[in-house]
Image (cartoon, rainbow, N blue to C red; front, side, top):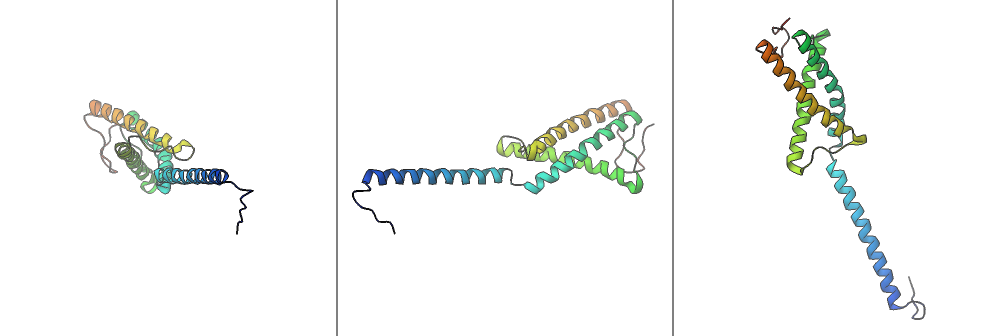
Length: 160
């Protein structure tokens, strides 16, 4: 229990203490709100990490695939048990998914994906857009030169 004597504590000093307490309380509440907002903006922690790993693996695979398509007329070979071909197909889906997520976020918030840890999600977002541009260019050139692009299934006719 706090005992106040009239000689030791005056009304102005009590008001000053109350103002400092209220100001500190508001500041702490604002910090909690901003931390919660920051957390909810980047709130898809698992999705962000999956997108980062998927994007960092997928963009080089797509580069390899597009190089193979441009130089040989075919995509990547199926590989053992179809693993390379499957990785190639999943990589295209991952890049399209990241671009779609980015466009959706842009339409809802006015900005793209958050930077994510160490700026990696922002980097993956940029690489995904570059990969999509490269896909459009190489597929377009392939279509102009060959009249079509190879099908996505193993055994589809490739150009030699």
